[in-house]
Each structure stands twice: as structure tokens, then as C-alpha cells.
Picture 1 (cartoon, rainbow, N blue to C red):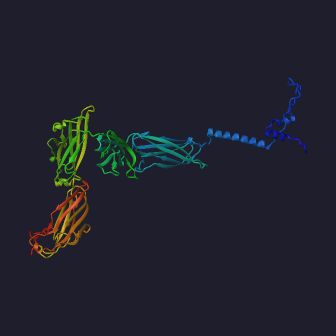
Picture 2 (cartoon, helix red, strand yellow):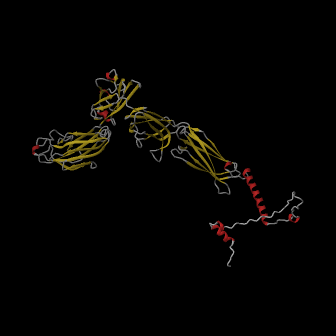
Picture 3 (cartoon, one colour):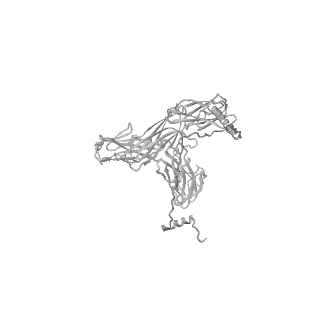
Length: 634
């Protein structure tokens, strides 16, 4: 069509993208016709809508409706029955109806017998079957009659408990622990009911207070010490238990800066755990631990001391702690600088004099008035009759104290800041062989205390102390003899010996030792030229050797106990030598063994000791020896 009429959509498209507003046609508006209408002013008598009788009488016979109503009724009935059973208790199985009654003391002394009575009452309307009682015991529990057995839990079968009935069970135990500690027992009942595989349970706990400790612990020690000062903890342990405490352990936890030195009982482990054995009621034992503590001025250091029974599996551990205490020592600046010097060192031989010099100096910025020095002497080998005091001082033998004060030593009356001085004494050990041989690890001890009154604002009585020990070496004795007819060997040759003819001799060495154990004990000697090593030794178990190059005979003994040769048998070895005397030896007694000496290390003093004896000659020690039998003849 040549003159197609544009559709309304195409016209709209033109107007949408055109910038010429003239192309946009103007819409024509037409007026609407006014209509007059009237509305009623009341509802009037309009006919209302009503259901017909046929509609009202129509019945719904649907199967679905019947099923729904039936399900609803069943649910309501079931809910009612459940509520009735739940609140009414008809055939109800509930742990609330199971009662565990506990009859026992609320407090018990540690180590005292504890009786716990259990009564399990079944309040359910059915029997309880396969009833089992589980008991968890607190740490430190022992069953009566089964002491030393660690028990932590137990299982007891109670079989069946009928409805309305009960079963009783009694526990008889020993309970150990620290005072004022609460111990908790846990009791658990597990059971089943007929017709069910479900396991029901009920649990109840019982607390008992440890009213008193079975161990009484008393620790004495200096409350204040100087840094670097030796101190001793004296730990007194007393049994307060009605039953024996077996294998009692004491453990000391040391503070930082403390170094263990010694104790009167041999440690079990790490120099900090000791086994003091069994304790019966009233038994008392004392453990003394000595060491040196180092720290800064005004620092406090604490020791933790625990006592308890031994763990059967780990012998160095405490199984149950029965008592524990913390003891604190204060480290204070040294008021006096004390320095004690033993002339020649702190290790001496029996009978050797020990000169002791005590040097002191006031380290405070204040004067010290009325100073006093007391040296308390002790030890198992001190000869009290030979204590010598220098120009001043007084030996008070009644309590073994050497005293210096303002009455004996003028410069102790007043010591200016930085003032110094010294006092001296001399000590010596016992020398009687019978007494000395009966002493084990002999020593002489000095406990030196210097006190004085500090002047100035911080006036107070002050003190410093020092401990010194002088150890005495054991006495190693060596004996060497020659024999012809005595000993393990058959000897040949003429008596007296003749020039150019061989004669043989038995050499016997004997070692004895007095007071201390020795280690590294060895004996050596040299065969002079002309003496022949025959290669025979007895006993063959002894380690004796001959070095042909150096012509040295050596006997390596090793360890020798204290008392060997006195309370124990001596150490002895024999070997055989020969000699062919030369003509130029006619008229003399030739030497068979020279440079004879013994060396050892004293394990107590850690000092080196030795013994040297004269050479052995043809002068033998047989009972039938006659004068001249040792002289070489032609």
C-alpha cells in the first residue's frame, strides 16, 4: 500500500528517538459525558441469601475423615496413658527410686581404719537384675588385710535386688593423706531390668576429712644465713599412726642456689630422696641435710619437705604424701668477713698438727662493739688434750669451745668500719693405734661464730659463721719380707749363699689399711742387677707383673677397704726371685728388692697417700734363721 498508515507503535518509536518536538503529535482530549445517578439511602428490603434444607442435610461419608478422627482419638488416649504412668509411677523404672545410703565417719585420722557402710534400696516396682557396685577410691587408700596394695577402683557384683528390698555392703579401709585434706569416694550402681537390655545407673559420692597427720614433722635450721654459708636442715620425723608406715620416704626440694654437700643417711636418689625405713607408732628418726646456699642480700629461699609412703613401682617416688612443709631461709649480707685457713691444707695424716688461723673484718659502715668469736670443736679423732690456743683466747674444754672476746683480745672491744684482725689455735688428731683403727672416716670439725653489737641507726646483735672440716687420711701400711723355707714355693741354693751359685728366695708383700676406703692401690719395687725374676707368683688371681726392661715388679691391687689387716684379712702376694752372688759380694748381704713403695687414693679425703719401706736383703724371716745365714761366703 503506497500510503500505509503508520501504526501506533511506529509512531511511538519515532517520537521516542526524535529531537524535533514538532514531530511529536499532540494528543487530543475529549470530554466525558456527565451522568446523573442516584444511590439508595437505606438497605431496603433486599432478599438475603439462605442455605436450602437440602444443603444442610447433606452427609460427608468420606473414609479420610473417619481415619483422621480415629487417629486423633488414639493419640489423645496414648498421651493420657503416658502422662499417667510418668506421674503416677505405675511400673515406672527410675534411678530416683534407687537409694544409696552411706553410713561412715565424716573425719578420720590419717592411717586410721575407716568403715563405710553402704545400703542399696530398690524402690522400683520391679526387680533389679545384674546389679554391680563400682567403687572409686581416693589416693592413699588401702584395704584392710591388703596393705601395701595400691587400690584405686573396685567392682562388686550384687546380683539381684528385689523390688522394695535392699542389699548392704561394708568397706574397711585405711586412709592416708595430709591433714585437712578432703578425700572423695565415688559409688556407682549399674543394673538391668527384666525384658530390657538397657543399663541403668546411679552415682553418689562421699567426702571424708583427714583430721590429723600420721607423721609429725619438725624442721630446725638457721632462719638467716650469709650467702655462701654452709647450713644444715635437721628434719625430725615422728610417727603418729596407729598402724606401721612401711618404707617411709623423705623428699626435699631445694631452692635455687642451694648445693647439697652431705647427709647423715645415704640418699636413695638425686641427693634429695631418702628411705628412712618403717615407722611404728612413736618412732622418731632424724635426717640431717647439709649444703651451701648462695644468693643476693635480702632474698628468701624455700625448701619443700615431703614425707610419705614409697611407690611400689617407682622406688624413688612418694606414693602418698602424708605431710608436707615449706621452710624459708633468708639470705643476708655477711656482717663479718670470716676466713679460716688451715696451714698445710684441710687433709692431714694421723698425728699431724693442724695450725688454724681465723681472719675477720668488719664489712659494715658502722662500728661493732663487744665482738666475740667462738670456735666449737668436734669430730671423732680430735685429741682434746692437745688443743693449743694462741697468745689470746681460752679453751673451755667442758664443751669444747675456744673463746675470744673483749676480755681476752683487746681489739674485739670496738671494731671500726673496715677494721680487721685474726686469732689462731692448733689442733691434732689422736695417735693411739688401737683407738685410731676403730674410727671410720676420721675428721675434726670447727664451727666458728662471730657476734657483736652493731652501732648506729640499725643497731642490733649481728653474727656471721663458718664451718671448717679437717679430714684425716687413712694409714696404708706395707710390709715386705724374704723367706727360704716358708711360703708357697720350694727354694734352692746353699745357706748361707755362696758366690757363683744360685740361691732362690720367696718375697712376700702384705698390705694393711686403717680408717678409710682406698682406691687405686698399687705396690712396686725394682730388682737390682744380678737378681733374677723366676716368674712364679701366688695367689695367681692377684695382678702382679714384671717389666724386664725396667726390672720393675708391680702389684695392682685396686680397692682396699678400711680395716684390712685388722678387722678384715690383710692383702698378701708372694713371688720368687733368685740371685747368683758375685765374688765381690762375699762378706755382704746382697739386696734382693729395692725402691719398694705403695700408693693409693683415700676415697674419703680424696688425698694421695703412700708408704715406702727399706730394701729386702738375703736376711730372710724364717723361724730357723741364724745370724750369718744372710752373708755371702766363698
